[in-house]
Amino acid sequence: SLTLINPPATTVKSYACQRRTPLKHHNTFLTDALEILAENAEFNENEGRSVAFRRSASVLKALPHVVRGMDDLKNLPCLGEHSVRVIKEILEDGTSSEVESTRQSEQYQAMKALTGVFGVGVKSADRWFREGLRRPLDLIHTGQKLNLAQQAGVQYYNDLNRPVTKREAVAISHIVEKAVNAVLSGAIITLMGGFRRGKEVGHDVDFLITHLEEGAEEGLMPKVLNWLEEQGLLLYQKTTRNSYLESKDGPARPPHNLDRFERCFSIFKLEKGKEGSGTSLNTSYDSGPSWRAVRVDLVVSPFSQFAFATLGWTGSKLFERELRRWAGQEKGMSLSSHALYDSKQQRYLRANSEEEIFAHLGLEYIPPSERNA
Ligand code: ATP
Ligand code: MN
Ligand code: MN
Image 1 (cartoon, helix red, strand yellow):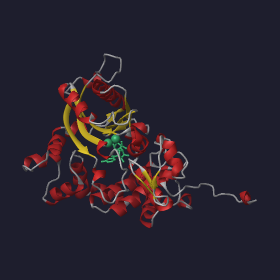
Image 2: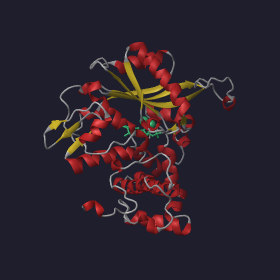
Image 3: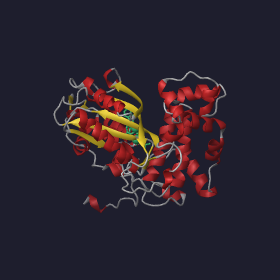
Image 4: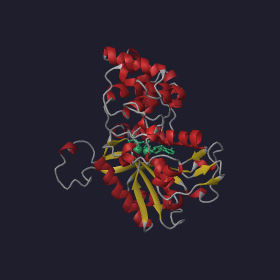
């Protein structure tokens, strides 16, 4: 029978959503380098190039061993000529001259610092860089006009660039649970993003909120924010109605529930020493103010879309991108955080769990901890 044919030693599937990518892997010395180039391409608004480097890095994250020589790259998908050149240089010389000169470049460093301000995107950062600005404080010194998000970003710059620990994420969970329960009983609050994938630190804390009773979640976000505001727990918040409503290039939209999907980008004021450690010794906190600022994302989803929202907000960003690419290119389907549309059948495919969505897509189920693509 055909099963007598031996497969190659290491097979790596070409879409990140077809493979398991653990948080800790064997090739950070290569993936960190490739991701610097990806980041730099983003700073130059070259998305194609950036995605190519991210895909290359992601393939190396999925390998069960350290890459020691070029032979180890045989049969691997997604490795473009440029990435291979960089990998070869690192394997031979220990470093890549392109990566090192990027890392040292004034543009890379300034763009990294400026986009590191909450509310500042590549476009603004690039404009400021061209005007000679280099550091976040330059925005203040030169009297730049900042929107409210950017003002908060500068004000809490140090805190927001300090990693959020798992313990702090749990403390924030308790606050969010208390806030949601105060305004609606029976709501379900789930930790999303990097922490759901098993990360020990994050740049923010992401939550998805839903309710078993479809429609009960309507109008929840403003109430939750009011409660938090009254308790003095919010330093900044901006609620956006789902932009999916207006988008023309996304998948066709479900006929119901559209105006119910809201998200909020916020900054919480977290009291120090309240991370539920159970100990009164907080020696790492004996200087500075008694609280820190933490970025928190809140999303409210109707229960009918909860599985899609869960899948969409768990990440990683590359894993999500690859899921959507797989759906479109391989299955003639269109996936969003709201729904899955099958173009051939011309209908939406329902799902009550992430497992069902993977099944609809013809993919093996990948648990959150293996979605660190
Ligand atoms: P980190 O630890 O840096 O926060 P993360 O994986 O949690 O890592 P986030 O930027 O918080 O990164 O994103 C978490 C998930 O939410 C990702 O899957 C991303 O696709 C999704 N997401 C983030 N921002 C948006 C947005 N504006 N619209 C839709 N989905 C988003
Ligand atoms: Mn996150
Ligand atoms: Mn987030």
